[in-house]
Amino acid sequence: MADVPEAPVFNIPEVKLSSSSGHRNMPVIGMGTMADPFDETALKEAVLEAIRVGYRHFDTASLYRSEKPLGEALAEALKLGLIASREELFITSKLWCTDAHADLVVPALKNSLRMLQLEYLDLYLIHWPLSAKPGKIGFPVPKEEQLAMNFKSVWAAMEECQRFGLTKSIGLSNFSCKKLGNILSFATIPPSVNQVEISPLWQQQRLRELCKAKDVIVTAYSPLGAKGTRWGTDEVMENETLKEIAKAHEKTVAQICLRWAFEQGVTFVVKSFNKERMKENLQIFDWAFSKDDYKKLNEIRQHRLMPKLEMVSPHGPFKSLEELWDGEI
Ligand SMILES: NC(=O)c1ccc[n+]([C@@H]2O[C@H](COP(=O)([O-])OP(=O)(O)OC[C@H]3O[C@@H](n4cnc5c(N)ncnc54)[C@H](OP(=O)(O)O)[C@@H]3O)[C@@H](O)[C@H]2O)c1
Image (cartoon, rainbow, N blue to C red; front, side):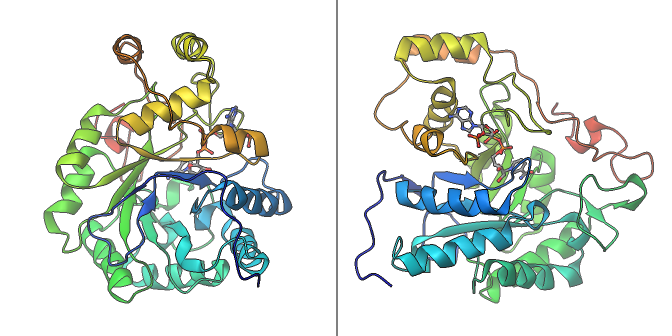
């Protein structure tokens, strides 16, 4: 291993997680690893490049199949001396629905750690507020296999993961205000993070206010609307208001979306495997929006971009999208 690691090109601000048992703060920008199409080699090369430019926070999940190549890339980065130690990294992974049963949570996390070649995670999230028949991890969850989650026992098992030192912090993903409130009503270790869809087209003001009041850090996923993916939309990157603001600041629409999230106090995970776009997405810290920009940003028509997900079933716990999102669509 080289003695002196290369200095990263960009330094990324960090936030403290309220219920974390570790010392590592969370970098406000994380690199997403859900790719479409999925290519292990491309992912590994992208992760090494991302570390060179300054990314330290990586977002994965058992669902994405990215844990193994991410783990290999991180091991390689250590070997190459791009980072001095694992402690420099902040790694998030997620519990899939098929493992969202009290007795399967710890084994699922141990399996993620094996894939990642790590001894602990920095953050482990419940991926969706839904359980499924134990078995093969896949998406969408077949309708007949969807089950109501026992929130109390699954969250208790998540707390166990943190107490065992398998993860430094625990949190949620895709939890509405109502579902987050439910977890907070009995948690002995409150969730540190709620990772949800957020972009200028789905700003989630109410959820953000609740999270702020309860010391839960919000992480935005698909902050660019997941342009060019099967699950995403071009609506964010093609939005005329965002284009207009971008032109006035001589920035890209992607930078407008990410700067907006940053100014809201929202952390985010953004995926790019392209070296130039990876850098572009970090160049958001030396400029700011004007009052006039905010007037325009606040007037953008709001709607959830990812409601098409087949997380509802005539048999399962959520019989409509309204129920899944508790009316927040
Ligand atoms: N918790 C959850 O349920 C959940 C759901 C969805 C996503 N996530 C996480 O969040 C991460 C990010 O979300 P996402 O991947 O859905 O969407 P995203 O980050 O909003 O968008 C990714 C897409 O935008 C392109 N892109 C990135 N930077 C760009 C730029 N500066 N200019 C133009 N295009 C750009 C990427 O292509 P290139 O690679 O070619 O640049 C990719 O096609 C995921 O990878 C995953 O880790 C979590």
